[in-house]
View 1 (cartoon, rainbow, N blue to C red):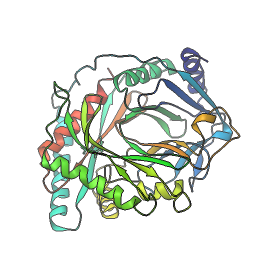
View 2: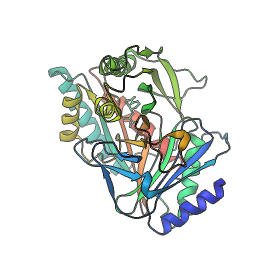
View 3: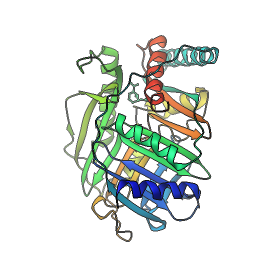
View 4: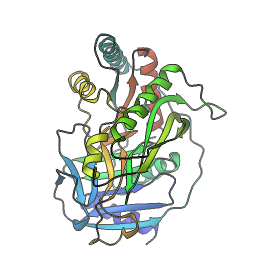
Length: 371
Ligand SMILES: C=C(O[C@H]1C=CC=C(C(=O)O)[C@@H]1O)C(=O)O
């Protein structure tokens, strides 16, 4: 099958209001599709099923799955396309934006005050922004947007997910939750944000370095008992579209008898890159104080318990395979409205105005594919 045929199948599925996910993994030259054959909503309660999982931020809520046994799985090659990424169009503040801004500044300030007076060390605070778009009348318009995402974010996990009773989500995630193949385990500590500068280098501040180090230390601690020799790279600058982050690669051979995929999910989701530290305190602060429901933003998604190499073999499952990504740089699309989700890590050294600007910039990079 070629790309055009895959797109044709997706368009038909969308028109028939049937669930599907399409995705391209970071730096890979292929697109995969998981096309569920009925319109039921399947839930995975223990992450033991095989399928494409879509899990919300709040671990108390249901994670959804397109089961392999109920889906057609397709894979096509995707030629690499290089394209200049346009500068994000950051529009002037409208009165609506002013309200968004003052709410976000208040939220960040409250986060900082909490960190100063409590045991909370870091909390990731976010907001959403609604943008009017041309209504997506057909799958064709949808795929044009998806194609723009693919080209703008070659190093991201670029996906489009649809279920008629949940809605349509699209995104380009720079962050792996983890991958596991047999016993080879990989994850990353990603934090700190800068606009891309001319020479591709960023001058990281102490605040950003510390914020990212907290994520690395969390992973080290969470994994010490289950990955006997944990390899941790030096922090490097990582480019995601026209945004840069600090990234540390973390990995090793895991003892799957001590910790399997459900155990890893429990240990790692939500990471301090999207929640904070300590996890429970940060999560409580987020649920009580953010002005909206995150739903699937900062949840995770991807291949669960079906082997990469046997992608087309529906019957074959392997319980030590997963390739999961954190749902960042994403949006929900409903008719003529795209809701963008953006956030940033708050520590004691955060400056509310800078944190607001970070979210404006992140929103701008997603917005550029909407025009
Ligand atoms: C929560 C988000 O980003 C996280 C991932 C990378 C860098 C981040 C930061 O610099 O704050 C965040 O931790 C988001 O983009 O909505």
